[in-house]
Image 1: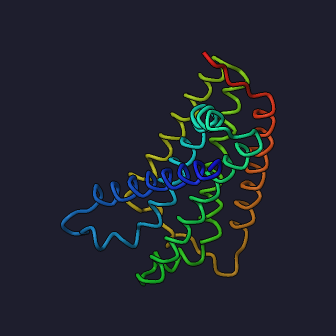
Image 2: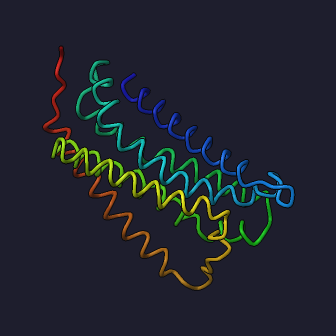
Length: 214
């Protein structure tokens, strides 16, 4: 039961990502580019939108779901593993959805998706990791941390909005991965550092976490 709650949270976060992606696909569709023709850009919206949504939702989980989980009898260990679940599970499913879209819709864009699947997964995972680190900073520094958290989420939202509003101009077809693993290595290294940092900061935060009963 303890981990079932975190599984539910993971799928709830996934639904948010799907909703945002579909919303932008509908917003960007025109008579010249109807919604069906924009399905090839869905992996792009899933990745960019998913990065922001997972960042924010992972950031608030430490404050909202930890007290709820503890009230249901969860231990710190179960909460720690639950926090990792909500970072990883949505990333795996979204990457699988991108793969499915790329397999059923053939175009230059989806061909780029197939080459960039590892990068898509790592970008999504980095979003959740950034949110987790920001939440731990807020927990550590109190009001000052809250100001930092709001400022960083505002910046993240602005950058993300720019890419989503680009109408797919920065899509996966623009990236040529043939014989070049530099991008994958760079994204992999950054993601590893962020994920490791999120795991460490969440562990340390939960170690000192206290739930006040009123």
